Length: 124
Image (cartoon, rainbow, N blue to C red; front, top):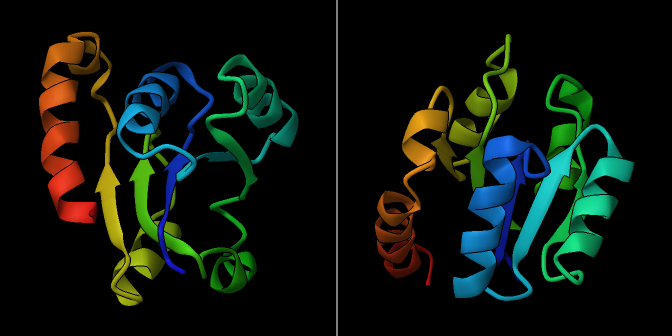
């Protein structure tokens, strides 16, 4: 079933906040993704495994196809220097939200909570 939410950069400064807010609304469906699986596991442990670790290298174009099978939503919490991953998500009609250069806005979590409530209506 396609019901997972993947937060790219989910164990980073911005991504952690996004994951924590999402896990409150979508328990057991949020995955913190990135190249460093140890960081993802460490963050997962900090959330009592409510956020799951997910290894993905958005610069390895050969890995996208199978990795994204169960993903319904991708949230980018970094600014990639290549657009291949975002273009692939668009190509397969996967919903992608790109949060880059939004640290100052995400510090105001009230705004984020409103956006997440709207997102809940979209994903549910």
